[in-house]
Length: 385
Image (cartoon, rainbow, N blue to C red):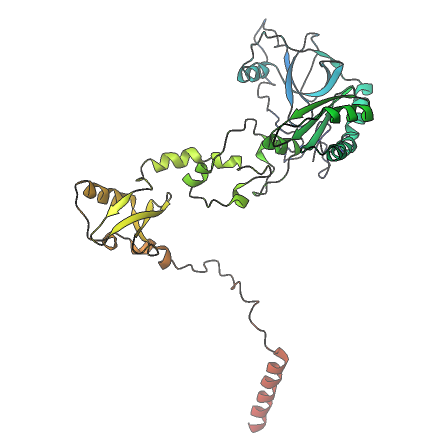
């Protein structure tokens, strides 16, 4: 889905739901901020804050100064100042919440900002839509030019300026790319000013959007605005298997959601013994193999028998470590182990009452023969009777 300011628009109408931007999934209003001050009146004598937040294609947002004192509300299409010419965007936030957004971006409220010229006329919108409809074809031709020149880069998105005089090409690349000849060829072919802007793989996924493995829209394309570094240590702390196919997102990097619950796991692990703890017993030296944060259980195995795991609670492990500090060895882990939580003793029952998943693998007998035999036996019994 998408609206007139999204890359998936088709004539300004959302695809799929056809609710014209009023769908419940809010996919047409990507990175929208709810204006909870909209119904509140300002104190007597206070002027409305003259800065306005405007959103352009995808997630690009900028703040402009409303020097003309225009009456603007969320959803209005406006013509804004650009480096050369003008651009067309949609108002996403007005009033005091813009001051808060500027504070988050470390901008002074009195800072020099580009200004809003006017509300967009129908002529501005028609020209803007015409340029937007050319973006896919131009992106395809630009990719072909890059392939002919042998450049190791991927042009992922194209964004036209509102007046159609300039186009920004977003690309990803592993190393530095000399695209001077590419700019010359594209400027000659398209007849516009060209700007190349390199973005990361996470920013590329943010601009393109998509559905994640969880079944929901990507966080980076809906609400996530800052990209924090994600390391494999986050997966280790959460006891996740280091499988790149499951831990990687649409961008090919580690999923941003690995950081969501990381602080909770770190707080829970503070009460646990270190994972590299070693237990001294009369039977031998034991190493930690696995930790279950939710049950508060750690699995240990002897060096001589690493396949046999023994489940101990964190209190039992701390007790054994305290005895080891006093140079006292316990008899064995079996004395402390809780047999009822050992993984090899767990028995899973069918609580829902479903049939076996392998019921279709069994060979099916001939029902007709069985039915015929049953009928013949009943006939013989009736005759004998």
